[in-house]
Amino acid sequence: MDRLEPGAVEQARNTDIVSFLEKHFGFTFTQKPASSRCVQPPSPAVKGARRSWYWHSRSTGGFGPIDFQTKIDNMPFREAVQAVGPAAVAPPPIATEQPKPKTLALPDRVGVPLRLYEYLCGKRGIDGVIVDAMIQEGKLYQDKRGNAVFVGFDEHGKPRFASVRGTHDNSELRYDCSGSDKRYGFAMVYSDSDQVRIYESPIDAMSHATIENIIRGDKEAWKRRNRLSLAGVSATAIPKYLEMNPRTKKLVFCLDRDDAGRGASASLSEEYAGKGYYVRDEPPLFKDFNVDLVAMTRHMQRDKEFSTRFKGGISI
Image 1: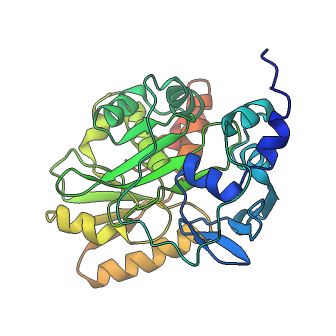
Image 2: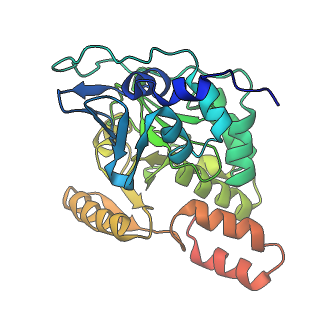
Image 3: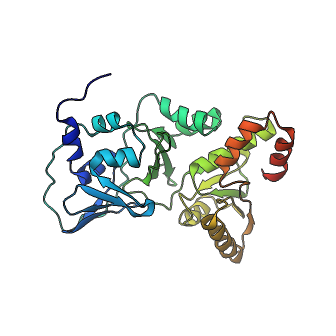
């Protein structure tokens, strides 16, 4: 194992955290004398000295880039130190305000996405056929830090939205890339169907697509449904999807089985029913459709009763 250079840990620990997050994660910060605040949700805050940080939505904080990577991305300590690389220890002068970016800043992609396949197919159980299709269409790739990047396109085929998901074990890293326009969600549109199934995340959409392949015994079954990810429970992506796919008349809400998902599904169903759409609520059996998929792949073959429950309980 390579030894860390003398002083590497101390330099990494004292590196300006704002500059590090902007360079390596694509975050953008508004800077004030007392603190800096990330404009992408969920948004970590950094104190004025630009060393200490706190992520309010996760009740987690720390000092410097090493703590951020080990606590948020669950990166091993040695790898976290090396990932900082050469960096200026002193923070730049504090600016009053940074303009909000107008263009999407996509992370650099890696040549061979080995970790991406290991994470999505190995850990998450998603069908490799579906992962291959998303990669070939540019809707999915692995960045140079090993994270999964999911991309949404506009009506002209231009990337307009991207979300990043950490792939380290137990990583909590997830954020929207700088300049993302949430009107353009990650979408899987292959059918002339008048229906769209709506999920909270791309992984949920790909997981339900995999469940459909398994139950139907057909590697192409997933293409008979259209799917849209909201990147959360906000409805921002729905109007643009309907504009780009005017044949759509039926909305099937497949949001998580938790308070946020159930509440959003109820309010969105009422809103779009009022607009004349046919709406239906089809939540997962467990917390989300990836939890369903993992449970299904672990037990379906050896437990016929469990298999029957899935086939009867999950609508495809």
